[in-house]
Image (cartoon, rainbow, N blue to C red):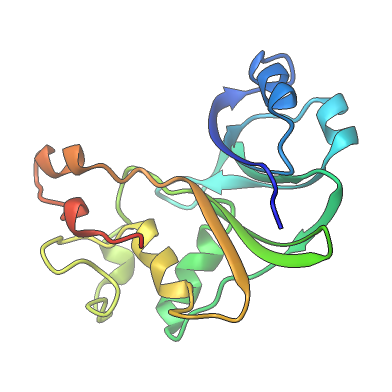
Length: 189
């Protein structure tokens, strides 16, 4: 099976943004979009969509969404789960940052996650007294939403998974004050 996938941080694109013209020209079968303020009517008419508002550091909803668009297919909300209750709590808290869907495309079913992982860590106060060592990177004092996402993805699965988006993971973040974030040691393979 082949299909066209686009992953794009739309930088707060609203219905009048030229980004939607470019997206239309690309003609994706699946689009994983981040920082969308509104989907134009013509795009909404052409694609099945699941969009959720993202959460900020204190849990409040932000003014932009993470989106999965599917053309010529169907999508339905899905849930990410882990083996740890505290991870599931964070997955629920940040459900708008990690939009999980089940996509039916060309007779195949895929599990798809559009990711908008923030460039700030999960609040330490909320995780006080919780053993996060199975999830967080060893040289990093913080837990990041990307760490929580990895904990929810099965090590091997019968399902076909697509996970993409804006992970805010860069080795240059290791140079930030207070850091190493140990980003250079993350394996995505």
